[in-house]
Amino acid sequence: MVEFADNLQGGGLYRRAAIEEAASIRLRPVLMTTASLVLAMVPLLIAAGPGGGARYAMGLVVATGMTIGTLFTLFVVPAMYLYLGRDYQKFIRTT
Image (cartoon, rainbow, N blue to C red):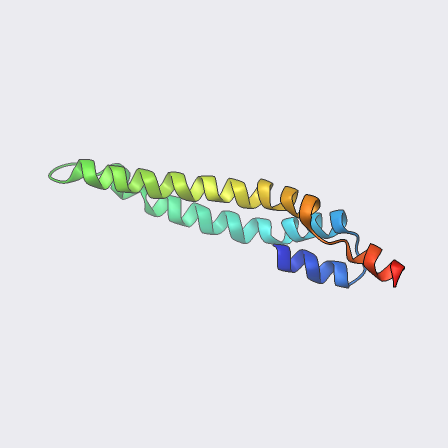
């Protein structure tokens, strides 16, 4: 997402517009990847029989971790980019 935003800023967009556009471009791939992995964990979450408890714990950790990671990707990364990212338009105007 950051690379997309940097490329968009190089194309003339301001920092905020660039990260919003990059986030909208990357939203679908990020959500599809997360959904496929979380849905792949469903058999582990409903496992029964010998070792079912261990499979459940492993599935829960992977699914929860991927979900939290996705939330960070969609909300924290753009916020940090706005806070820490370089505004190329200001750099271009001063040189």
